Amino acid sequence: MEILLIIIFVLGYLAIAMEHSLKIDKLIPALAMMALLWAIIAVTHMDVFEIIPGIGKEKHHVEGVLLHHLGKTAEILVFLMGAMTIVEIIDYFDGFSTIKSFIKTTNKSRLLWLFTSLAFVLSAIIDNLTATIVLLTILQKIIKDRDTRLWFAGLIVIAANAGGAWSPIGDVTTTMLWIANKVSASQLVIHVLIPSILCFAVPTLIASRMSVFKGYIEADTSDEKPKSKFSATMFYMGLGAILFVPIFKTATHLPPYVGMMLSLAVVAAFAEYFSNTKFSMGEATSDSGHHSPVHKSLSKIEMPSILFFLGILMAVAALESLGMLFDFAGVLENTMPKLGTELESTKLSDLVVLLLGAGSAVIDNVPLVAASIGMFSMGMDEPAWHFIAYAAGTGGSILIIGSAAGVVAMGMEKIDFFWYFKKIGWLAFVGFIAGSIGFILLRNLVLNVVH
Image (tube, rainbow, N blue to C red):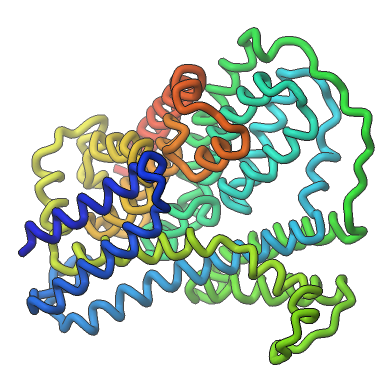
């Protein structure tokens, strides 16, 4: 029966990976896979376990295990829904137009550094997907030549994914590791920031010396004013509210979604005040929903992404509950050769993590990290978790379909898969390796000092 479960999981995984070829939204195979796996477990009365760090597998009833995993998944989904809503409220007030005021130069090389730096910083706060959308929208208004814009878009994808890797709120995978108590916000920043900087700075440095980034662009003389006088206020308030969440978690030790809900409540209250709209949550009139920035923003959040995360995380949880991931992790740890340090503190082969990062360019990094959480039992803030956060977050840049940022750039700019692979893929790979080497050297230095 376990073989049947693995076949269903592999087929579902392939359908997700081949989303663009099959023309089927990845949420469909994810939800179907999740439901089938748990149904087979329940109908055949298979033994299910809860993995307890330091102890191993402990047998439980299927209903209890299912509820446990649903609770852990719901923490991630509610957190993401809160963050998405805050971002949509900022956009409702045209807050992201504030960024355009930072762009003063027409020199292509300087513009490249400006855009990639903005992508790196913004993605650490509002996540890499949203940062990419915002910056590409601004890019389309500033650079009219499409060929030049494609190069900028490719480097923005690399920088956005690198920026999301070092922040607990910058990428879904780092958020998952943070909520699962595999990494703490402060230690993640300390250990992954420098490798992430290398990951985006090295490709940007190489690209800035290429002929395509020589010279100047045509200056945009139009002076487009923000649609709302509260644009800048809501922009900085929204970013501040999201940045407040790790502080709230550190101070209260409550799950991150609680802090995100508080931040959303504060931002939403100001949004309602600024919009001069009075409404009742109980009213059913279309006017109240239409004029409320909160209702408008809630209607625009990406529910397909939320449902995909629900499906894939619960599908991986089904395999975890059977102990299959835990057993597979033992095989990996015993058979894969070690790279770099041989210190016991690393717990996990660097080669495994590098392969995971490279694999995220082909297969979605969310299930890869979800599987890692279920497989490996290292303690909180072990170096391997920080390396997984870096590798899974940045490896997807190698292919245009390897990350959410890449996929949205592909859609917005109609980027050809093979064009990206030939022109940008090698730059992303160089950045990925540069950051990986930086991480390993820093980690070994710290571990040698400690020991």
